[in-house]
Image 1 (cartoon, rainbow, N blue to C red):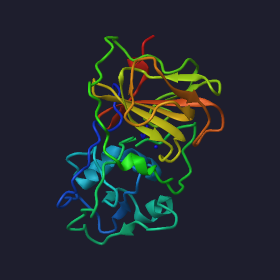
Image 2: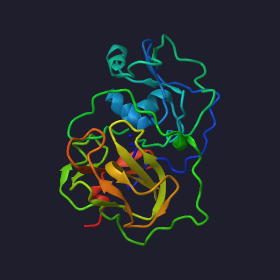
Image 3: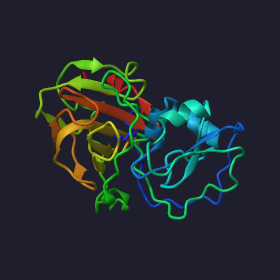
Image 4: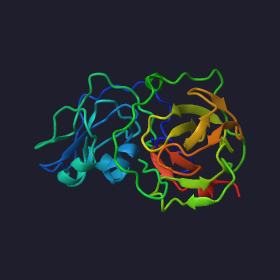
Length: 277
């Protein structure tokens, strides 16, 4: 993928069914522009990670006005050399296209909201993930998020709590601006960094393994990846410190650890300054 900084930003704010735009104005599209077709479970962050570019570069190349919402089947331009990008694209199935001119209409026939692990993340274990075909997201994740009767409110703490105790083995810079990796014993409890609502719980984001995304009332989204077990489901309202799962080594890592991200809107921020000491 959480698919994927700023004081907790996640991922998507409140995922609701997105309406397909009548058209998508592309900005400065070269004649050999490479086009990627959004698949289920993908976000600008996971797409950017695949092609080793930034989400901001994709946003600028496509002239997006609302980068937090993309939909399955949407065609987006990936900045860079087409021949190089093609080697990183999906293997098998529908292939992205190299266009000689920008398409007039990029609308998809049946748009759906995508859990934004906007997540652009290139999840670090310590090295870049090898490009592979993205695993299909659970069908349930395409459904609208059911809002709780009472919206979560902040706990009142000045900063987020640490989701788990352990040594930081990959910092924000070495994770290529996605988050941090915390060493942990397999099966150790992973706890919510703040009050909020689970907006994604699954394994459909490439490289993240079992992933939980929590949207917080302050506009941040926290992501917890490589989990062994997940104790919450999409729509669950959690409190600061609640046990949401256990540390594991699912996804792109080979030893137990927790990949933790904080995103503000669609922008990942360094979690360390935002975590309580």
